[in-house]
Length: 133
Image (cartoon, rainbow, N blue to C red; front, side):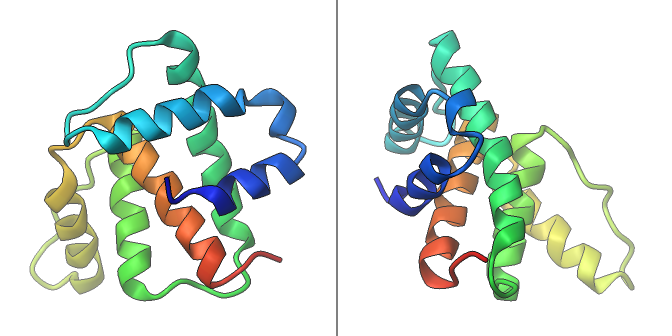
């Protein structure tokens, strides 16, 4: 599992007591090991995965520098899918919005829980490569 940096940051944060790290780890591992429609049925793991995703959305704001554009697009797509949000299809002239929409569309078929786990994994890799404040 490539999310060690995420769990290290979680353990050092004030959110650590609010999130069951064992259930979160099991959920992330199970969902990432599955295919695109992978989910966890256990209520405790589901709650931990959602809480871990919410923590990851806060952790990404503490990165030392902005991620590269490709990384931002992946984060955007995973975030939108994890929250079951569909961005509006942009017009031809809205290039930035079109890139975001296309990134979301590429992964729109995956489960919400898989998107949450992939978001956590991406944030962990960014913490590794960029670092946090």
